[in-house]
Image (cartoon, rainbow, N blue to C red; front, side, top):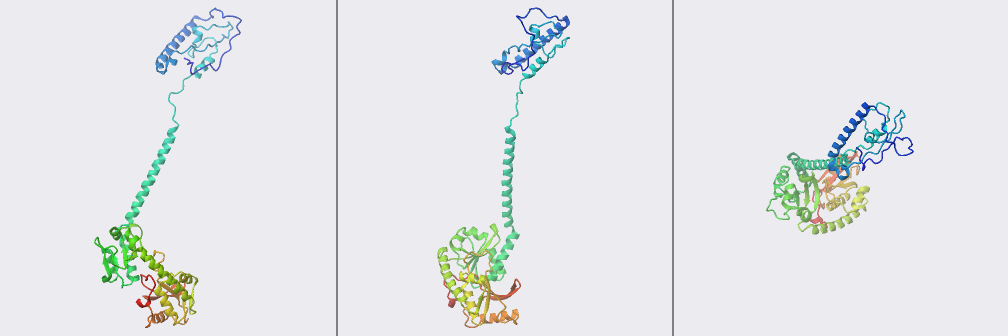
Length: 408
């Protein structure tokens, strides 16, 4: 049945013959068999319409009383004249098959035009919600993977093998580069490693829960155990300067200089020593027996060189010409402002005919003469970029403040 609220006027209408007046009540000439078939079709159509009205009773009052279909006029092609719209012609459907070639296409089109729309429509927002859910899941997966990677790196840095390797590296550096005359604080395991590398046992201070803050030593080896004992006060309050650092993350080991009077007092003494080192470095540049590279010149003028090393080079230049290539430190990760502890000297002077071993012996003999202001820890020959060098080294830590050669 047609729905007035949905269908409206039919899209196509078969034109009827022109009417001069009211429709004639004459019944069209139809065979008895055709009329019976049409009546049966009308009854079937009405039964179907009644069933449809009962199913649509819940749709509202407007759907309960469906109006009659818009009238459709058609003509018998045999030319018997216009046919009045009675109950038969008003409800013709596709089930009617007349014997004559009656045009029924407008009725079929009318029924198709007013077919109800599907009750369920696709929801366009569902794909977007699914895409958003996938993005959220991807973000959570990235966060989880990142967290697991961080935990894996942390656990890897804390593995016994890695910790043992970093500890051995730090112990070897302290035993070779730190003066055996200074006291060093460390945890039980680290002190055992230092002892195994030859550092004097009498100069080791084992740290524990009852250790004072700051510790009574010149240097402290900061391990994970030491950080757990002293927390942030270790680096912030009483051991601000780093001489060397090994490893990374929770398993890192750092060699620090203890400031017994606090970080502020240590920085004041360091600044005073810096001014003194700048003056001594400029004096070396004025010595005609000393040749320096551009790198060494800038290091001397900046006051970066250890005061003891400056005195040793001035003493050596009094006895033979020297050529300074550069200054440096053997401690990886040292803090800015920590003085440089070694000097590399070119072996091209004083005599080209002297072999490297002979040059080392000659320089060491001068540096260790009676009356020498200071004695270096060692003098070692080597090569760098194809050039023969002699390295003159002092041990850590450097003196802070204005250096007094008489106390060295």
